[in-house]
Length: 194
Length: 166
Figure 1 (spheres, rainbow over the protein chains, first blue to last red):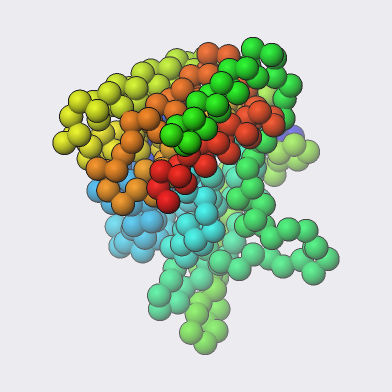
Figure 2: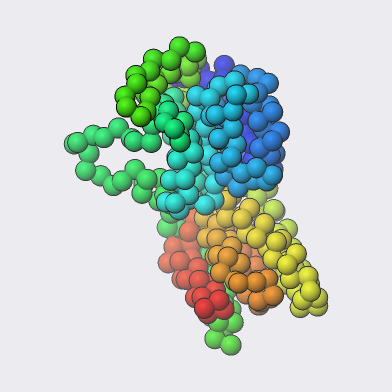
């Protein structure tokens, strides 16, 4: 038996219309039909306060308030109806510092752009299957930033895995494709040499 | 919501109920229906053509901006903003639609703008080199990372960026 996803209500907050549409399309295709979108954090937080959402996707870099500030508002504002809601942060900036700062502000999962359907689904499964307890200190409220440690695990650091490029496929190119790319490379080399 | 918390020195540990899991059921093998995932992948694939058209429009846009830069250098700040927007959008989408190399070239273009100390240093030839590479990828429908040839192309663009910003 698979998940019954049709009962979920999801909020997507991203200033990029393509990404909003792409996320909505994928989530709709797997059976989630109650999907609201907002193009900035202010409108997004307003929507969040009006309805009960099961999951929030937010972009990292937005104006007038950033994705991190939005996470703060969801986690700590007295207006927030659900400070425990899982939040998946999406961003093209997937360096370790960014991922760490997102975690330090209360993000549940990080999704690096560009993403594949497969990776998006794995993040969705992760927030369903591996919820972390919340921690409240003087300076932080959000999911426990310490991952469960498995002493038998001797693979790569999880964060390293998250930052790896998702789909580096090596495919055979036709002669025409190879010639076109090599011509572009020669052009770049020529400009660099001038 | 019932909070099961435990005071422990300076922090409180709270284990909220897993409402998400309760709502979607226990799942099982596959958890998210594999047929639905396949359907989603098919839908995204079908959007690939639309993406190729978007890239083609953006390539023209970059070429126009390079020309504007030559004719009116006073517009450099605006042009820089537009180039960063294009590069940021394309690097975030390319690989999703199977065009990993578009993401790589767009990332290289974005890094170029990041490394400049001011918009006045923007070089139209560098913009054209990136637009030219993206055109070669889209026109010849190069999916994936382009193998060794694709990696070499990105390495050359990286070297160009270093040369122009170092």
